[in-house]
Length: 70
View 1 (tube, rainbow, N blue to C red):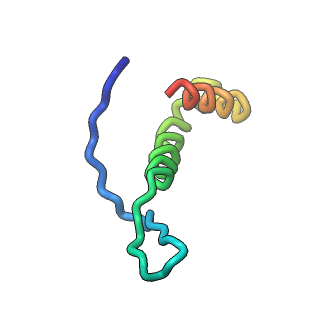
View 2: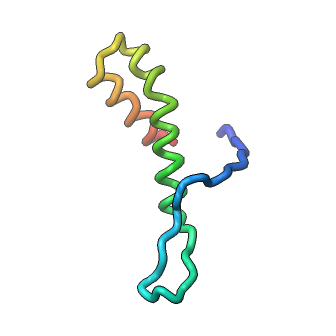
View 3: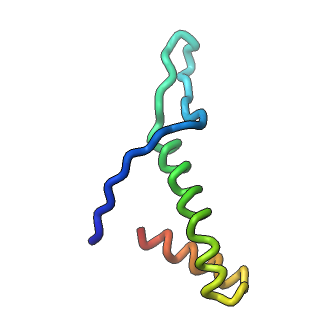
C-alpha cells in the first residue's frame, strides 16, 4: 500500500455549529472528506475521460471504480 502524507490549508467554510448558538463551531471530518473527494474527482476526471476516448459514461464508471478502490 502506498502512503502519501500531505499538509492542507482550509480556505473554504467547513464549520458546522451545534444546536446551541453559544457553542463554538467545529470542524467535522465529513466536511474534510467531502472536500478531498471533490478535488480528487476534479483532478482525476481529465485522465479518465482521455483514457476512454471522451466516452463520458465509461469515464464516469472508471472514476467511480477508482474511488471505491481508495
